[in-house]
Amino acid sequence: MSPTHFRCDVSDGIATLRLDRPDRKNPLTFDSYAELRDWFRAQPYDDTVKAVVFGSNGGNFCSGGDVHDIIGPLTKMSMKELLAFTRMTGDLVKAMIHCGKPVIAAVDGVCVGAGAIVAMASDLRIATPEARTAFLFTRVGLAGCDMGACAMLPRLIGQGRAAELLYTGRAMSAEEGATWGFFNRVVDRDALEDTAQEMARRIAAGPTFGHMMTKTMLNQEWSMSLDQAIEAEAQAQAICMQTQDFTRAYNAFVAKEKPVFEGD
Image (cartoon, rainbow, N blue to C red):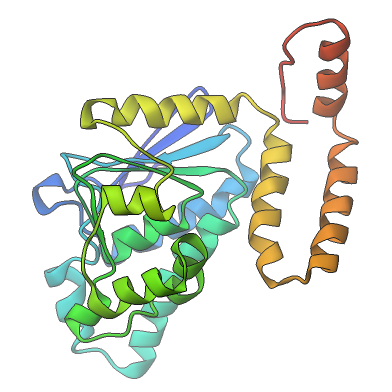
């Protein structure tokens, strides 16, 4: 795919995505929502991409749904049209979860509304000290339960902290986000891009089939009992043991070499 409503650069197995309206702090539109959903939906079938970096642009990550292009039109839609829209936004999150590739959010500056959801739906999150993350939905008269926020955010930062952010819509600082477990690390703005790309390169050099299984289990086991999770992991690991990458790792260990994984 060659997207038209966001930037996508693929190099050495790493796809770097950026919303591309820096003058507006990179808001989402109906078109960019749909195109991002479709791009992530296509990823399970694209072996050229091994890891994804969702980056910032112009000092900001994403300012959420565009006030003029989305919020205004929503006030004039029928219930059927509104439900189609909210299902589409949720489908973006589901597509990110089921894309089979680790996703790293590189968050700088404004990261609010649906932008905060995109960061939340990523597997790993790196921030700058300038990052400000807010789930703004109650501040525009809506509920905080948008795009899976009430299910996913408490699992990342705890029920009480999630409730505070979702009820008040206040911004979470980068320091808070790191302390609470939302961000994996905080780095200087000048180091954000390199840090995210280095993390992506390290992941891309690993066993991509194994990473797909890891991501699948991380998400599927939310709804499993412990016994079910242990059994599911036994089956997943047995499948991974049939891959050539598992054999390569063993042979490299015996030869005292570093394994070179090929994803099969």
